[in-house]
Length: 124
Ligand code: FES
Image (spheres, rainbow, N blue to C red):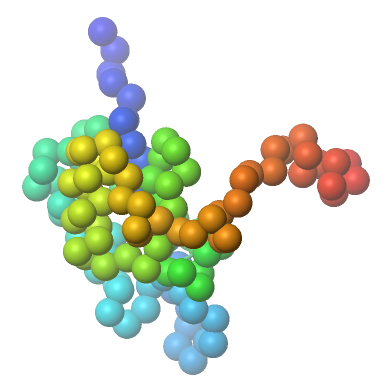
C-alpha cells in the first residue's frame, strides 16, 4: 500500500494590498491570522495528514474576501471568520456536507469555461 493522497486541499487566499490601496484584499486588519487558525484547527482535530491547507495568492474574488477554496468540488467560501472556518471543518471536511450559507453566490461563481472553449474565445 502506498502513501495515501489527501482527501482535501484548502486553498486560502493570503493576498494583501498595500495600505491605502482602495482595492479590497483577503488579508487586512483583523483577518491576518485566519490561515494560522485554519492550520491549528486541522492539527487539533488530527486532520493535517489528509487535509492540506495551502496559502495562495489572489483567487479573483476579492470583493467577497477573505475567501478560501475547498477541493475537490470547487467550493468557494467567502467572508470568512474563525467561526466560519470552524464550522466548515466540522460540517464540510468531517461531515462531508458543505456549508451552503457560507458559499459564494452563483452570480459570482458561474459554470467554468473549458480550456478548449477559452482558447477558441481567445482566437487560438
Ligand atoms: S485578494 Fe483574495 S481573492 Fe483577491
